[in-house]
Amino acid sequence: MADRLSESDFVARPFEGITGEADLVAMREILPAAQATATLGPDYGGGQVQIVTLLPDLVRAWRRADGVPVIALQPSTSTPDPSQDLGNAVVAALAAEPGEAAQPAPLGQPGPRLQDVLAPGQEFKVELLDSFAYWEELDPANEQLADAAVRAADVIHPTKLVEGVPSAYWTRITGREYLRWSPGIEEEALLDGLARLQAKREAGVMDGAKYAGAFRTVGLVIPVWDLPRGTEVEAVAEPAAAFVKRLQAALKVKAPLDANERRARAGLVARSLTLR
Image (tube, rainbow, N blue to C red; front, side):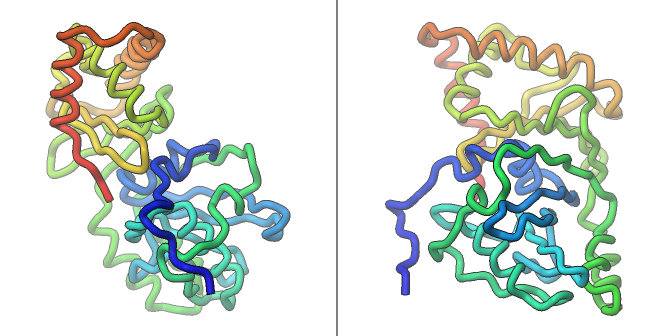
């Protein structure tokens, strides 16, 4: 029997190389309810796999009644390589009986990575949801799944994609509006770019918005801004796109950070929350 992964097998950026890396990270960390469809590689049948935020009872994998494997991104995978855990989840879902939850290998168990399981180079579109109605498709004959979907809907807060800024999401939580962005940019490079803007007071995405901090996870950073109270998603699109252009210019600068930029970077790191 193969040994479990050890700390020496830690993968700093486990989803690197997947075209939809930024979307996967967004679904894993900041989206309350979403789904996407991807294509499996030929070694795994070449069919579709449904990728979702959550499944009933926080299980990691299921095989839908129609035979399509389903994997969930948000159940805890605090192991050296979350991509391998998800690859094992796909394999388990393919082996499960239609309409049944799968039993993936224990977390940290060696196996194919998600990069191995998915067909390479594909792009997939994230669909934001306002319910967990897709749970009913797992087994339409199981009324308990429909009931569970209704009960779970309470955790879903309003979330919308910001037009023109991929993987940037407006959300409203307890009456406050935020912008959360999963840019898919390597952590150190993004922090340097944000620091250059922060030192020039150009890190805001719109008038009245404040940089709140960031989530640091799976080798990437997800910046978060507090938006002026009552801001709707339509008002964010144009200034957020302008911010992205400023950031892209800052990322191209190769000179070492100066003293002001280093202080700004330290402040950014201090306002970062490391997730699992």
